[in-house]
Structures are given as structure tokens and as C-alpha cells.
Image (cartoon, rainbow, N blue to C red):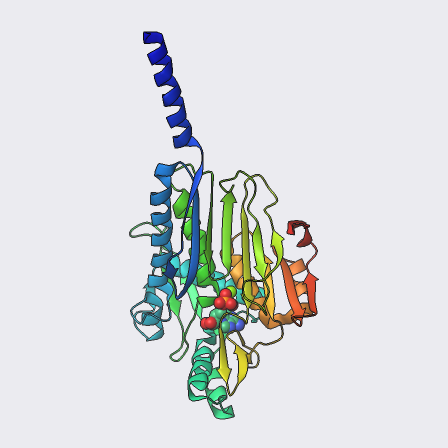
Length: 349
Ligand code: ADP
Ligand code: MG
């Protein structure tokens, strides 16, 4: 009798243990950084809520530092000419990457395009394209070589420690910076790191407005499948991508003119500016990039939108770990242009 009760309890115990340890998943979809987000954590039930909270906090923190829409963000204060010295270590690291992207892409990526971004936004609000004088004035303030970002060489402590090394930023009056082209990717990377810190998740995924990073496995134990959307029909999936390694790690980013654009007198203009002309870059409907980090994928997706298929693919072939796929043509006749390593991520369906 006792034996039966004991083994009964053991069975109940095993069943409860199974429930507690079989990975389950939880998803939240808060609106952050002015866009939709999807965050999924897979693991023990007790870990999921805290993991998702930590990831959301990381997204919000990047926004507080780097948003150009929030006048009290550190970047907005820098753009307003307040205290360009001693900038936050996170901001310094992202800006440093932005400058690196400029030198890799011969200025197709340029964080100093902000005066042009504002000019085109103003033009859209006024319902007419900017005139030559306005364009010339904005362009006179643009150019990544105007920005000097250095790390104070005398302090040996890492930048992330209190009292550690400091970034020193110098730029002329009138020069303004937007990190919008890489901040979302950076936020996704930091959110995934925050999700994983201090807990063993079976998998997870963070997506912010077209920038996605996943790791491990989804709750069904298979592998993550990442849909690439059509630039012409929101919600229509053109192809699916998968991670190639057991780690389940994949960073994918799509830049397209379907989500954000200016409309002036019935014509759509991209929100990506070609720094060489000051005009919106309308060469390609969409570019999808796979890279070792989401920030890198994000930066390349923006740069490739400016460079176009031919120049873009040439540069990407020289960049280790970065693969790209352009979509051109029309809705009924889409054309795909792949870098040499992209297709191995595509799921044949
Ligand atoms: P999305 O992922 O929404 O398509 P992107 O990552 O391409 O956006 O970033 C677009 C934003 O980057 C623009 O709104 C603008 O602030 C900024 N930007 C525009 N053109 C450039 C450029 N050539 N280099 C760097 N940043 C740019
Ligand atoms: Mg980008």
C-alpha cells in the first residue's frame, strides 16, 4: 500500500518535473522604437517572463540613448550641440561602427546624413521636394570625415567601467548624426544577450521592424525559419531562411522601401539617402542581409540600398560573414540577386 502511494507520488513527481523542464515558449509584441517587435523565449516556464523583461529593457535602453525622435536622448543632446565630449560607452561603440561602415562602403553608409533626412521629412510635410539651395545647404554639413571619434589614450581602464576610458567626439557646428540605420540592429543584439544572461534558454528570437536575431531552437525542437517579406505586399513571404549551425544563431535584416518612406506629390521616396547626391536612394526595392551580428546586417542593408546590385554585391563578396540578397523587378516579375554564400541559408520548399 505504502509502496503504491510512494510510486504514485513518484509518477506525479516525474510528470511535474517533465512539465517544468520541457521547453515551452512565450512571446510578447510590444511597440518599441516606433515600430512593431516580436520577442520569443523558449525554455523552462519560470525563466521566460524574466528573459522577455530583460530583453525589452535592453531595447528601451538603446532607444533612450540613440533615438533621434526623443529630444532628451543622449544623441539628440549631442546634435543640439550639448556636451559632445565624454559620451556613453554604448553610444561610442555604435558610432565607431557607423564610421567603420562609412570607410568600408566609401561613404554609401554615412551617419552624418541627418540634415538631409530632416530636409526630406520637412519637404514631405510641405508636399514639395526640396529646392537646390536647400539641398546644397544640407549637403554642406554632411560627410563622415568631419567627425572625429577617439578614445582618451591615457586611461587604461575599459570604457564600460566607471571611471574607465572615454570616447571623445568632435564635429563642426551644423553636423548632426543619426544612428537609426544601425541602432535597431544593435538593440536586437543587446536584447538577445540580455535574454540569455544568467539563464539557460533552449532558444529565443528578437525581431524589431525587420531586424531579426535568433538562437537555439523553437519550442517544437526543430529549427528557426525566418521569412523574407515581399517589398510589394506586406505579409507575403518570398523565401524562408534557416540557421546553418547547431547553435541556431542567425542574424537577418531587411531594408525595404515598403515600411517607411516619404510621399511627396503622390511619389514615394525612400527614407534611405544617397550621401553622394543628397537624394533618396530608390535603386532597389529591398535588400536582405545575413551577418554575424544584427548591427552589421542592419548597417549593410542600408549601405547596399544606396550602392545597388552591382557595386553592392562586389563589396559584400569582400566582407567575411556577410551575405546579401537583392530583390528587384516588379511584383509580378520579381528578380533575385544573391551573393555567393546566401543560398545555403534558403530553405528549399
Ligand atoms: P529600415 O530598417 O527602417 O529600412 P534603415 O536601417 O535602412 O531603416 O535606416 C534608415 C534610417 O537611417 C533613415 O531613417 C535615416 O535616419 C538613416 N539613413 C538614411 N540614409 C542613410 C545612409 N546613407 N547612411 C546611414 N544612415 C542613413
Ligand atoms: Mg539599416
